[in-house]
Image (cartoon, rainbow, N blue to C red; front, top):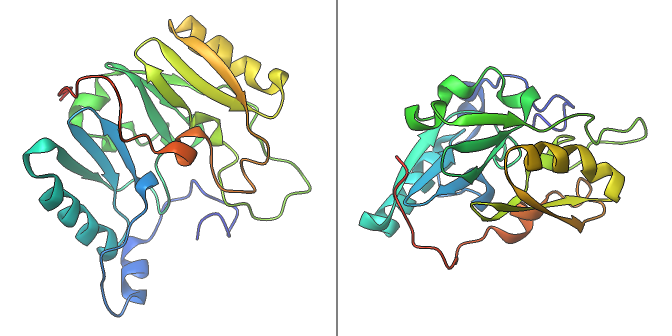
Length: 201
C-alpha cells in the first residue's frame, strides 16, 4: 500500500490493516524473509504474516530459528541485506531510524549504506519495487557480492562502497527492475548454497 501512496518509508498503522482482514490465512512472500545462516529475519505486518511465521518455524523445526520484526508493510530485502557475518548493507532512507528494531545481534553489526541517487524518475507512475532497490543484492560468498544496474555507470557508486568494505563485486545487467518488482535477491531467493549453514546469533 505504501508504494501506491508513493511513500514506501512512512510508518504504517498496523492495527488499521489488520482490521481490514475478516479471516486469516497463512500468507507471506519469500522476500519478507532474510536468511542469516540458521536464523531467519521475517517482517510481519498483519495476522496473515504472523500465521506464516508460525507455520515456517513449525516446518523448519530445529534447522532454523525465525525471528519476527515489524519494519514496513512490504518486503525487507529492499531495506537491508547481509553481506557477510558482521556486515549489513542498508537502505539509508528506510533503515536510518529502524536499526534499533532489528534483533540485538544485528544492531551490533557494522552497517554500510547504499549511496544515492535513487532510481526515481519524474515520469514514473507507481512501481512494484522501491526506488532504493539497489540494496537488493545477491551475496555469493563472504567476500563477493553480485549487484545489478541498467548501465555500468549506474552501478559504480555501490561498487565503490562495497569494494571499500572488502567485497569483490560483480555487476550484472538487470533492466526494468522497478517495473517488474525486484532486484537480484528477489529474482533468486537463494535457498540452496554450498556453504555450511552456521549460527551467527
